[in-house]
Image (cartoon, rainbow, N blue to C red; front, side, top):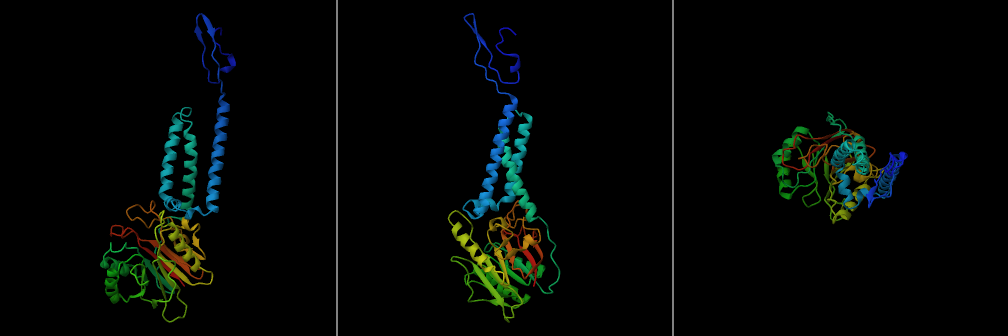
Length: 359
């Protein structure tokens, strides 16, 4: 068309129209970007972004970034993070579908969100949300109850009631003050329990009614640490040694201490040991880097329950983090592992865990 300044084949691109000045027609510079070129360029950028994300994830796995400061805390909150990025993905997808041309930049946010949601979702599927039914009986099995009561947030009566209801053979309390320990020694005595393990300071303690006694010469790990070790009184070796732990929080300043504690636990888990490591690790299996630590297998992973949060009790289990564990050596079997939700309103920030371990 005369005076248009645009050739007939330029309709698929972006055009800057002409203008008239002093009776003379001038055609501004025309910029044409074919749609197929824009699509191709977007796909190339997305492919580069995807490769960079996967390379970063692979490098993090190889370098054990799950134990690094800050990263260790982010990794622990995998369940909640997966839900959040899934919602971000949904918002980005809706925004792009409504206006694909104007909001094409959302694709570059949508891709990493989808990748992170996929990795988090696959981790949840791998670890499992199975609510395991407590195995019955005591025949060649230890009923092991562990509950971080956060010092004195739970009354002695509540603890005794739960011990009685679960018919536990061994009770591990990873964070208990001296006054509460004295109360429990008296309160649990009529039920047949004795204080079988304590590091001296009232922190991780073990109560038992099946023949365990405190090992006063055991290595309690790197200092500062809160561990207790109990062995069988008769020395037959039929029952496994029990190690109760309460690891530090992996904060920015305490991350090295926490790493040393986890590494010490890993050093205990040899192929020839007969061992149960129980308590609050302040670490998930993602922080371990696997469903095991050394030769010890995580009991929750063995029962497909390792994605159920044990802390904080105020959040739904699917959004919490599983930092309370029972680790078993290869000679032991996990008959059941259950995160108890009956005490969510009991005052403690942690949920109790109950494992039935065959020997």
